[in-house]
Each structure stands twice: as C-alpha cells, then as structure tokens.
Image (tube, rainbow, N blue to C red; front, side, top):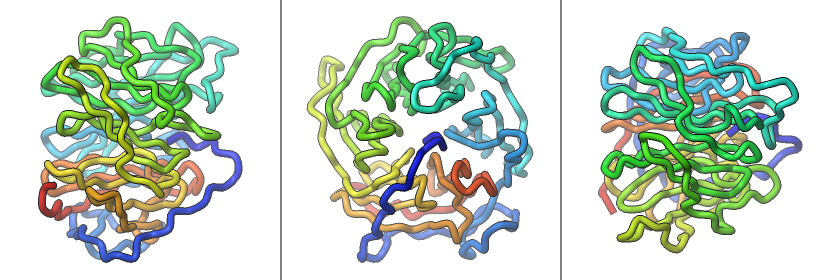
Length: 326
C-alpha cells in the first residue's frame, strides 16, 4: 500500500478470541526502534534516506528475499544477513507524468518463478512504462505487458501451473491476467467488490486452491474469486470483513488461514477460514506500516515500508504454526 493517504482511517478492532498463531525466534538483529516479543526478530533495518521502503516481497530458495522499493524505482535482494543488493532500477517516467492516486512513480507487486525470473509491476501514469516487467537472472528489466496508464497496478500473483500472472489494479478495481510470456492483458474480473471507496480498492492478490484471492484496502475485505473450468472468473465471494487498511496477505498453509498486513495500524492479523481475525503483531514488535507478507513452510516474512511512521522500514521473520487445513 502506498503512503500518500490524506486523513486518518478507523483502526481495526482486534477479535476477543485468543490467537491460534504462535511465533518463535528467527533472525539475529536487535531492533533499535522497538522492543519486540522474544519470538520476533529483525532481518534488516533498511535505509530510509536511500528510499528503501519495501512495498512487496518474494522469497528465494536460499533464505533471502527480493523486494520492490516503492518510490526509489528499485528491485533489491535482502540477504539473510541483512545486506541489501540492488538488482535493477527502473527508468524515470517522462516529465509531466503523474501516477494515479499517488503522483510519484510506484513499484508494486513482485513474484519469482522457479527459474529465478522476477516479475513485477511499475506504475507511472505514462503509457510507455506502466505495466508488467520481467527481470531474468543476470539480465536487465524489460516491460512485457502494457497496462492502462490511468490505473495503479499494485498486487501481483503467479499461477505456476497455468503459466499466468494476475494483477490487482487498485484504481480501476480490476484484476488483469497476463501470460508469463507477456502480451496483451485480459480484463479477468471487474466487480464492485474490487472497487475503491475513497482511495484504493483491490490491493493484495494470491492464487490459492483453485481461486484468485484479493484484498480491498478501503473496504477492509478479503475476496475469493473462483477460477472456472474454462479459466473465467466466477462470482466474487467475500470471505473476511473488518480489516480496514489491509494491504497484502499470505496463506499460512494449504488451508484458508492467512496473515494480513494492516498497514496504517501497524498490525498483522491472523484471519481464520470463517473470517474471524485476531491481531498477533503490532508496532511494539517493530512493525512500521507493514506492506507485505510471504510464507515458506513455517516461517513468515513481514516487510514494513514506514510510510506514515517515517522511522524504520524493515524486514522481520517469524515461525508460524499454520494449524489444521480447512
């Protein structure tokens, strides 16, 4: 979620039900700006002066993470020891270009294919740069699909089995679908549930168990859109509500339990399959406007962009207990 909100939003009220999520130690760095629970550790404190505000995250096999830095136009690897390696810097937009809802150029969602190819989204308000980009190992970034300059491509999900990418557009309230080879995007879904209600609508996106799941930041919802037998979008189902300021999310296992980044409220919520939720991490643990999450096995990675706190953009890791699949 970008950090250009004007005004405040109503904070999320935590569920009274005890959390079914447990965290255990991971990482080695001690936080300078927060005193987290013993089971929460920092991987890296990022350099805000250099524009290192992580917007989205994807994981690599060796334990490192690749992130997009939203407003510095950079894709970077965060190594296990906290070192930051810039992999690519995207071109500046032409003079006069203004990104919808944000003004500044914006790097959003990122995913990684098995061969190490990175796919990510860039929004500039200009038709020559806005769209889906690809970075092969050792290569240079290349746009492989143009997306509407009047939109804000934000979340990105990869269907590895079908070789397709799904894009959540926060301004146009649309899910686009693009082959991994690139080409003309198809408008896959454009339902009222995806639309914004004042600022940004469709935001985080994941492919999970035969469906595309999308969060809506303004409406505080998690949506499930079945993929039909013919690949079309089925009827939108609202699976969770009351998550105002939800940014990205990640499933904790094969079931429908997920973790949600509640950006403006400095929280991570544990959302159960029935839609109920409990806050499990807060600013006291080092969260500073969490933007994205990724889960591998029993470890969760949480990136904070510090968009509103303007203090300590960072990356945390924690171990999780996914619980029974449902």
